[in-house]
Length: 79
Image 1 (tube, helix red, strand yellow):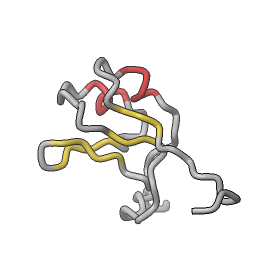
Image 2: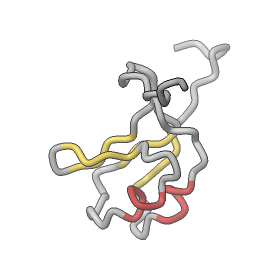
Image 3: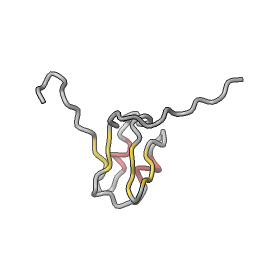
């Protein structure tokens, strides 16, 4: 029998979504996330890039539109 897989530690990668300062702390996104990628951290919520699948369920459920998709920069576009 093999041991259950453990999630990788957080990385510097960018999560597909992020929680803005508009967050009211209701926890709807936290409870909706199917992979538990949203965690409380010092009075705010953190989206773990190593767990987030980008399903956007958190974006849909947030009553104050505080969860947003992370803008994706085109690698062909100059900085």
